[in-house]
Amino acid sequence: MKVRDSAVTTPGKIGGSVNSNQDKDVVGMWSERIARVLGTGRYLIGQTLVVIAWITVNAVAGANGLWDEYPFILLNLLFSIQAAYAAPLILLAQTRQETRDRVLAERDREINDRILSDSGFLTRELAAIRLRLNDIATATDVEKLVDDLKKLSTQDAPET
Image 1 (cartoon, rainbow, N blue to C red):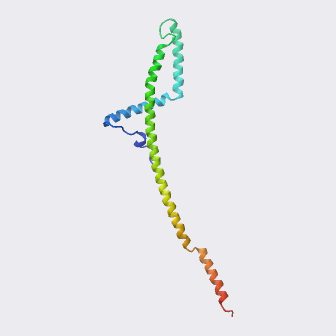
Image 2: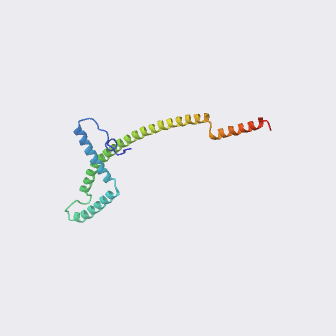
Image 3: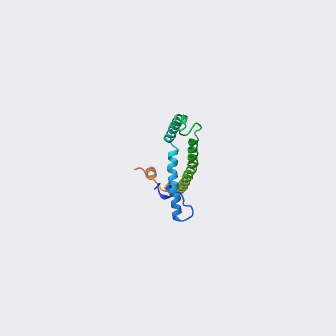
């Protein structure tokens, strides 16, 4: 079964023209890439190092009044901008993932229904074969009958 086809990798198209759907898909794929980066430990470590460097540089430069002084308002503004863009992008990526999960779940249900009906059919066929085999004499049954006939023939035959 082909798992990676367009129904699984591309969420359902929502209304509009082809161009608007392509634009939504491009933005969606872009948001998924960003969400994958924002959710890694490497990103968090990098961001922590940048914040430490920012505070260190600005604490030294801030004493001279050159840059972002102690309450670090510019750093706070940068975090606010990052959060304002990151949250909707992550939600968009989650929505796309939910759509893919729903498509996969529907496909799994269809496959399970097919397997269930096939196994039911095979079970009925196997039961029919077993019933027919009960009516057919096996080699052992025939050998027993031949032995019984031989015994009967030797008992009924007059001794000479």
